[in-house]
Amino acid sequence: MAWRKLGMIFDLSKYNIGWIKSHAMLPTPLLLEDRIRVYFTGRDFDGHSRISFVDLNRENPEKIIYVHDKPLLEVGKLGTFDDSGTMATCTIKMGKDIYLYYNGYNRRVTIPYSNSIGIAVSNDGGMTFSRLFEGPIVDRNAREPYFAIGAWVMRENEIWHMWYGSGTGWLIVQGKPEPLYVIKYAKSLDGINWQRDNIICIHPMTQEEANVRGTVIKENNKYKMWFCYRGSRDFRDGVDSYRIGYAESEDGINWQRDDSRAGIELSESGWDSKMQAYPAVIDVNGKLYMFYNGNGFGYEGFGCAVWEE
Image (cartoon, rainbow, N blue to C red):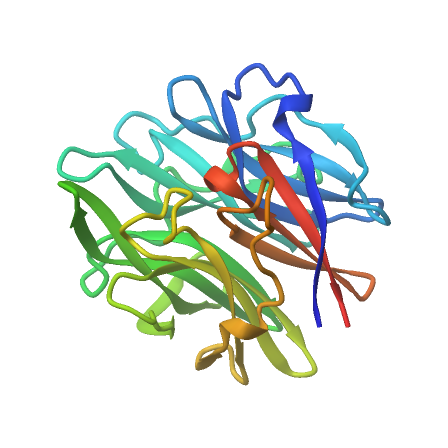
């Protein structure tokens, strides 16, 4: 069992989106009746990140049917948690509304940036979004003092689950601070107020590993997670760059990691030959698709793979 790669299905160089200088990071799929909408994060000419989307053919995600050329969320007000950028991570349908969970970040002085998790809502099928709050819904707290990123949310009956990246510190590498983080678990009754018990889901294999963006599905009463992990010494398209890992769980809280079952490896050449990052898995009529970024954290665009037994 493995992922069959469909290639880089969204290539930024083929489209003139004036405000985007580079990147289509963190592909975040939303299944609609007649299409797959994939939200992504582009960087503008000042280095700020904003969210946009592309629409794909539901039966053939290699076929792009629409490219949105305007940002969905502007940066936040000066001094708020997202005044330097917004980055999509997960969408959830709530009746006629759609919740968008996103990273917001600030540029800092002692470290390059700090992240928190925000939420926005759409009332028009995911074409436009507005913030529910000016502030974050998941941020630093007494037991998690660094930052929070990369929320992936699943709703089961009355319980909402969140798997998110929690900062565990900063490592000085060649005189510069590099962040460390692990995937943790939180739960909620409304998708907004979250109970966080400092539960680590994916334990690092080394002291210098960072893991994040755990995308979770449930099959046959078992939770399955694909995530990405990296080292800290040479991770910008180097030997420590992001790879995709895998884990399973009976309860969504306690996980057994087995990266050998991720089902995907670096290509010998091309757009994902140095890095594979930020996986997002979606079930379309019983067929699993994974959207993910390649080299340069998605500098050129994002790709797709289909799961084959």
